[in-house]
Length: 638
Image (cartoon, rainbow, N blue to C red; front, top):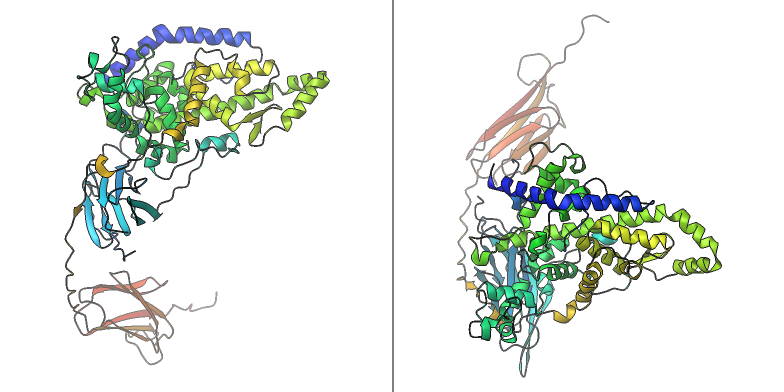
């Protein structure tokens, strides 16, 4: 048994011995107490989820460096994309600066992909940024062409941008007027619900560049972790910058941690942006959830719950995802089990537990041999899983609401006709705010659907389902205000309201650097390349003569009446050029004087499966003959 299997089995023993019996018993009691149980929670379903302006030179011809399928057992492979993507961006400083500059940044979709450079041109000057972010100081308005380049040889898409510099009596203002990048975003949960945000809120918009997610917030738990792990030196503060319980920073400790705290909370923004684009989860929402769950410290924040990573995911927290996403289940299963032909729901409980344990292991960023005990690359890789879990929960929320609406339709119809007041209430509900979904004659808003999703993510699908059932039994519209009061899991309403409060205030904490001093890397400018004289090409003086005839008398030589006219002849070169002619009196002549000797030549009759290959000589005439035999005629009539 290897170490990974031992860890999974250890988790399984703890789960079976202490968690599952009580949870399963809880499920049975609740199922018996509800005669209209929706039946959405099958055997073993999660019941407690995670608490969780000069001409510009193109660089499309930059030399490419040489690049360096079986089931994987590396847990991090459950998180990373199958192919490497490289991304580069340009950013202008806000406000006035003493000297005009822009910042270039680049990253790879796989954090462990090695070093990433930025290569390109500012106007006609070639540069290389060996590190990122990189400050490029400007002499005036400029145009850029650049791209990210990995040390393995892969290159990203070319970015072309126009930058304007304006001088003010007190400094310079810099603005990016145009850039060739644009990403189309689809809110996947909005599509699932069939509901759009009619309020045009800022918190669910997709930003086009990762740096537009940068924030500057005071996060006390993060500051504590930074001080405790020696990332921030607060030794000159009383008590080392922490209170006597070592679980909260003092004012002095917060001041010492301020700069590193801002840097730390923004180091995952590229991967939040990428996961948002790929999985359809609004990026500000995704970053806010991570902030509330872990304050961007990817360790185990609640040890008694065995929750790990930036999204504080536990073993049961991935159950909804494995049930709703067969593709992801197959990706994980092939690294754990030898036979993945059966769906997740039909596996034995111990097999399901092993798969869940593998997913949890993939987000556990604790690392004894890593700086500060944290594998930051693994933490970055895990962001995509948090987005996938949110998407799976919003899908499950939709399923629960739809099922509740169907199961309670008859009861609500009876209640609606019982009294005139009920009829009036139902009619009022039908004329509620637009941008909502009609669930059992009530309106559920886009915001409330996200609240439901957060509740499911934090407290589990079962808790959310029970709160919906309670509202339905009381014939109340399914809104957050109606279900939070009877929410069966402690802490759920406070968690949801806290997430939404942080979302609403997100833009108040947006942060952009005001000067280039925060960016260490500077470009290396390359000398202007001296044009190399183009050598005079050595061309052939040869020609190709093609003869096509029908050998009616079987003497193998063309006679006067045997030439075939208007026959199409194709000459193709090894450089993928093609020349076509039709025969005249059975002959087609091709002048090859503009081609180099040594070029591969194929002469063919298209559609007739006749061809001849040869190498073009320096001079002379090459004759190619295509002879057709006279078709055999029958000697007697049939």
